[in-house]
Image (cartoon, rainbow, N blue to C red; front, side, top):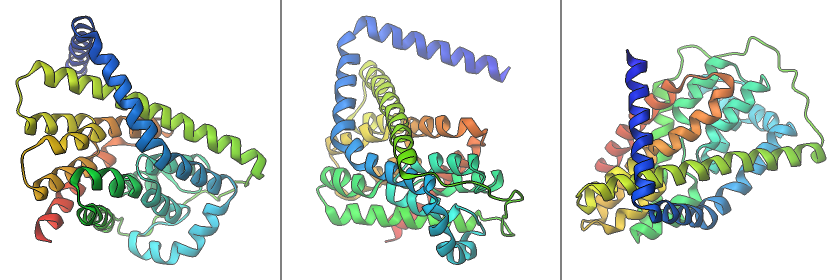
Length: 303
């Protein structure tokens, strides 16, 4: 019965999108152009270098060496071993969906096990620092508020990781036999891997941007509710609309933080695409976003 409702909903959404394309074809073109501009000016420059460097670190065995150095700290905090320390660190630096990407790659290379992978999905959802300080700082017209959002997002994920950590330290039952590659072998693979993820990111942003524009243009909504719906569907588009709301900077910051911590359907789809190969459980990621949003908003309101 549940599957039938899901299929019915999917059919209705597809029919709605087809209808939108025929009635307002310029909207899909506008969405495509806007999403490509956002991608090439904001997302690609700030994410691509980090993705390549992180993949190189995994392929060359650097990640394992970094993890060995950091493991005493992260083992005590989160009760995890293996490449977990590197995954957490690179998630903070690179931004989502890098967490799910490197969790999957590490699981594939047997440097972490499935229990660790599912647990890491709950709290490795960090926005790219350059995106927050650059794009969000510009939207909010306040670099200090952008720093506040960045710090709150990091702290809320760390708190979440500690709250949900396993009672005992998770150790891998299988010995890690992963062999590091040469630089000339690793570089093409790292670039291809980064491009693959980024192209899917562009596609998901374009799809949800078109869907949100079509949905909001079909309804008579105030700028506030238009921004909320857009932000739930696509985080980047929602954040760009925050300035259209006639409200205080404090409330705008609250909205930006909400969009970032929840991630939007667009980001959730990117994560689902990354974890499907290793059959990881999406519910861990979804649960993490709900709790993280609540913790982050509480910290924002208190401080």
